[in-house]
Amino acid sequence: MSANAEMEKISDFDGKEGEPKLEVKGDRVMGGRSEGEVVTEDGVLKFSGKLSLERNGGFIIFLMKGLELDFSGKEAFVLRVKGDGRKYKVRMELEPKNPACKQFHADLETKAGEFVEVKVPFSAFRPGWGGQIMEGDAPEDLSRILKVGLILADYEQGPFSVELDWIGVE
Image (tube, rainbow, N blue to C red; front, side, top):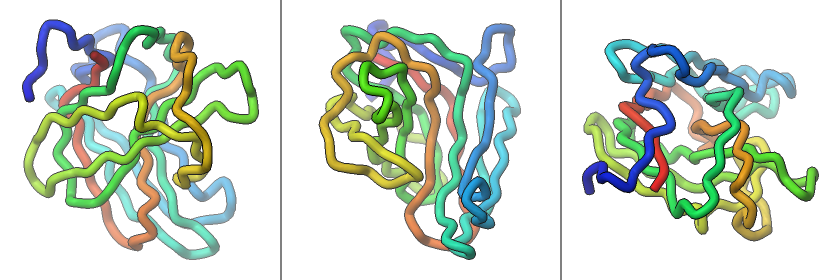
């Protein structure tokens, strides 16, 4: 699959004005020990660090924040990603009609050492918290997306690294 005219980029991480602000959050808010960082260089975002299971830890999140995006009528995220073979989740946070459910996750399989284009349909997203997918349906209202990112919560302690060339919707 290659990027097509119907695909609309959210970010290509080139550092130009208007690129989303980036943040890393994780299990440290609950006393965990996972750590990570995001670095952008030459138009590629690298999210890396170490996942720890100590002190009930086990998740780390990279987010693009300060967004106000409308994905109404869109079908999927499209990402050009190079992973380490671990299973990540795409995460989006929206302004919901039901404030109890504002985070949604969908699985993202990565291929170690090789950039691939991956499509993640919005219909695959489920409510989530701390990297865990919960019971519930895909979001119905995609008119106000506030944050988009990746989360690692595979309970495999150790180093991780994933790179994004760009992320978009179609």
